[in-house]
Image (cartoon, rainbow, N blue to C red; front, side, top):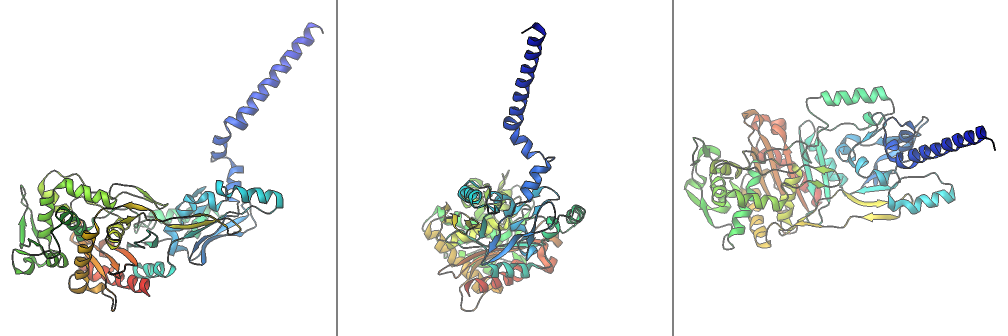
Amino acid sequence: MNLPLRRLGTVIGVMLIALMISTTTIQFFQASSLNTDARNVRTIYREFGRDRGPIIVGDQSVAWSEPIDDVYAFQRIYDPGARYAHVTGYFATAFNASTGIERWSNDVLGGTADSLLLSRIQDLFTGRQPQGGSVELTLDPELQQVAADALAGQRGAVVALDPSTGAILALHSSPSFDPNALATHDREAATDAWEALLADPEKPLENRATGTILYPPGSTFKVLVTAAWLELDPTRDATSTVPTPAELQLPQSTSIIRNPGQTSCGGTDTGELVYAFKESCNTTFAQLAMDLGEQQLAAITEDFGFGTGLNIPLNVNPSIYPDTASDAEVALTGIGQFDVRVSALQMAMVAAAVANDGTLMRPHLVATERDADLAVINRTAPEVFSEPISAETAHELTTLMTAVVESGTGTPAAVPGVTVAGKTGTAETGNEQDQHAWMIAFAPAEDPQVAVAVLLENGGRDGSAAYGGSSAGPIVRRLVEAAVR
């Protein structure tokens, strides 16, 4: 072979090697980044064009896919959309985005989970159109309906738990939104809906139940103070003597803490814990907080889950017990003020731990995952999150919380024939017009089936006239009635 041909052959060989290296690099090393590139239309069509499985509550689908004649082939449907929006989230082609269970269970719903490998192999051999699996939630449709109805027209949240398993029976944030408006394949309509939600001063996209906004808990925090105080001395109980003065001058401060009505609790400067608890005496729990100190309070809150992010599988923002610089600030934390901040889910966890003899179960939303043939591929087992208090302390707290509903600030939550244990709270925000109304509770006290937390932001429809008992109490009553029926 002459020299020119050898040179030409060498050039062609080098070009072939370069082509092979380039192709291998693109198809192997760059495959992942190319597949996730937002400009990759093929990936978008493949991801959003799948026959996704349903999200199920009770025995009904609340999210599913329907065939549609466009490039995506399937349209996601949510019904009743707003009632479950903060749980299901949305699956939006217009934004190439998903939220809620649609996001966190995407591999099961989209049929790409490792646990669905056998189903995918079977589809290859049978020629069946690939289908996603289904996700069954722990939510009770009746409790979710009660929560949505009770919060209608108000800003706030409701969370209900099964205290023995951690299953979330209701989780509703108000106001809500229609996920169908964001899931539409009409990009312009979806964008308009998104911009309207962002501009809404009521902030419907915020999940107030899981802590995208955290709130001062007010007097519901006194359950935690009491828990820490009882844990320190096993001889203490509901009849133990505690301070109940009309006023408490905070040390190194000009501030004075007063009780509701600006009187002493019971007309004396000391009294039984059960009276101070059911009447929610501020001076009592501010003093107990100072006696305990920051470290003891920080430890008990951590045991209950403060400072820990959760996945249920939705992200839950950690509740906060703050660093304090003085006894005065510690005193304010004792009544759920200063910089204490919580989610509704966190306070439902507090009630659930007391209800479950001091054992806190890990909250979860997903009950079961199934393949397209309804075979179970995963079932959530109850899991202990922590054991923040002893069974004896839980028993004393149950006695105290029962007194709140029987003859204290929580009587509006009473249910005939059912023993309800609860604690009310009215949290100040620095603006007298913006106090939050709270109540946490569980029932029946002797055999708890449900633990709940109710938050009414800025007092809900009662506004500046709101109190935990009078405003949140009736919602607790409705939830308990539905749960124990």
